[in-house]
Image (cartoon, rainbow, N blue to C red; front, top):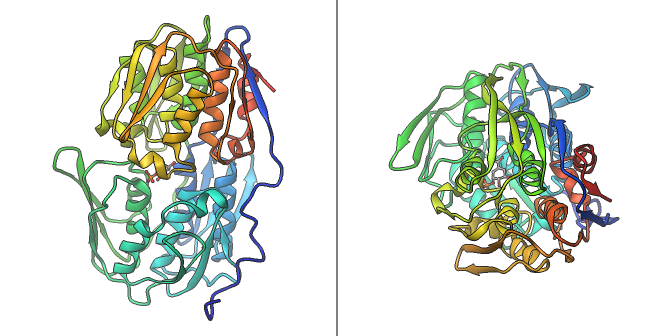
Length: 456
Ligand code: S3P
């Protein structure tokens, strides 16, 4: 036990208590209009960045999923007052940059890599010590990649085995601004560095070789920080943040999460005769790689009523079933659809011909080894699938036998992708545990049933 570090082993249970088995089976066409929950990335940022403002940030459309609830709990432990004022309406009372209080107990982020990594960044610029922990899935994910820039800024890690949680972070007393080039394309890594840089005097610069989702820099600018974004090389960006701003709260409207919309969307493409509307889905171009890919596959997706809501482009999507063809998905598209590969692989199983998805190394360090879990999902249901290096190759055959039980490995997106497969395959598909769906998509089963899906 490290002196001064809170004892975390008595309070946190990294394994789920009760499993919820689920089965999806073919039924009639999907029909109706629905709105999927708010975007997870924006909801988590609203809490963490809201907590860094001076004043109250009103959030409308908050995702009330487990990842967000765990992040809110942790930010309360750091001194922010966070209130739920109505259905999906929250108020975040911030403590200002550098204003966090030292938490009495370990911060438990559950399954949330985004909540944990962004909070690591926010804490790294404060002179406090905090222990970070999570469930068994989060404990298996790499944290050293985030700790590297934070240590350069001046934070110290007191207890951390193998670059994994649980770990204790001692924030910098005198944070220094850095220039950081992330070794992997990761919005979490970029965001953690920028949030730590808020407390440093001078410019913190992140140069990313491939642009990743830009919600942190957009929200920081919206709250009044001086943030400059410039093109850097082919697909890259150079983000410069002037340190020690006073962040002023402004209201946030959270659009529907495109990564959640992906599940009913692909289901409607695959279940014959389907015709659905998905309301208010965020169309930020750094999040729409799946739309581009499905378009190339021949999917019928119409963007109706494109508009701007709360600083983000959104659209209602009309999705109709139809035949798909296999495509080659280039590696450079991965950052704009990094969470969508499991459900794209399911779509690929029903396409005519082979789909090759390239450059998926980062999928190995998601909530599960998602590359292996996606291949296993398809193989368990009779779809020929290979992994070659970092590429995933699916042999489409316009039909999928189904009949398998999928191991979800505490991964919400594997669980939902398997359910989508079961709605269109010849035999039902079961999952061992649907508990983790609630991390990002509370109400998934009910929403799919409202469209006519048979999920039980
Ligand atoms: C996220 C970034 C992505 C993504 C995750 C959410 C974010 O992770 O997979 O679900 O909100 O910044 P990486 O930054 O590790 O690619």
